[in-house]
Image: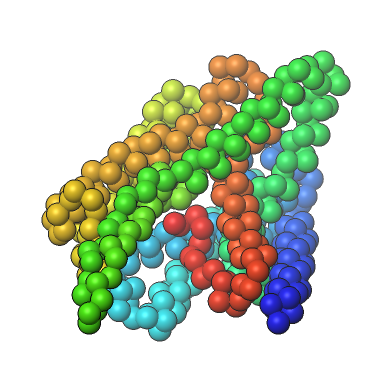
Length: 435
């Protein structure tokens, strides 16, 4: 019976993996279907002229190259990520939404998901209008202007809603979190192009094969470091007092309360980059005019690798790491939960003292977690600027890719455990980026 159950679990796992691969194939095909009414030659020239623009590169990374192709999926999944972040904050600050999160159960969760989708639609419409204006301003259209605006806004918005739906299908019928897998596949799809560019530079004598070896060695070292830090945790020993059960006295039990070094996932780097690049994109808009030359110069101070950018980025990552840890992991709630279970931290009185102790431990862990996120994110910028070594990866993109792979591997392992019931082991976690 156990062998039959294990075989069934492995068969189900194979079907789920095949479904994920098929969904990724659909996504990659959609990323190469261009919007109607665009001059592709002028589009290619525009991105070639702006190949050093970090803002375009940042958004193109999350869309897996769909933005540079100006495809139906040019907006990618970013509107959904933005709306999810907003709803996360609102669910901890707005009483009505917080009540849905805490006491609404499955119905409350579905209601919050509905609000998230509606907000995604609104953000997609606004961003689609902005992209349409950018295309029209660069004279890349071959259709009447009103027809172009209508088709582009509808196409881009539909593309984002399709990607959101596709991510939900991967989560439901595949393995891992669908949104994370779509972002991961988009990031990884850029690696062959970057590798080809690096080898081309080596053949032309612009770089050496020794440098390429160093790039790969650094990449492997960063991956190992990310895995180590993501699995790192501080375990607090919990004890349960002896209990009288009839004539029997139960033995004193103990367990562990694990507190991760990184309690908030990769949300702080994403928020930090968004807050820096959003005003930079506004600056780009004003810098089109020659009379705004000083604004155009100001833009370069917030480019990756510039000192101002590095200072702002590290500061924002640390700020949001502390803020989100305090928001999502309330030490008072943890202390109350332990008290209800009758669990004690050795040497610490229950209640307020336990909350203070947990808060102190979380503060120390959060400092190292924030420094780890900031270091991994800015390391490529530092290497490129000061050592002049071309890299295949960005810090945030590599962080997202590694965390996504770790999440998928942990879920695959549940299917390979003897006797594990795959349906019961399926993860219902939210977007991995938002943990």
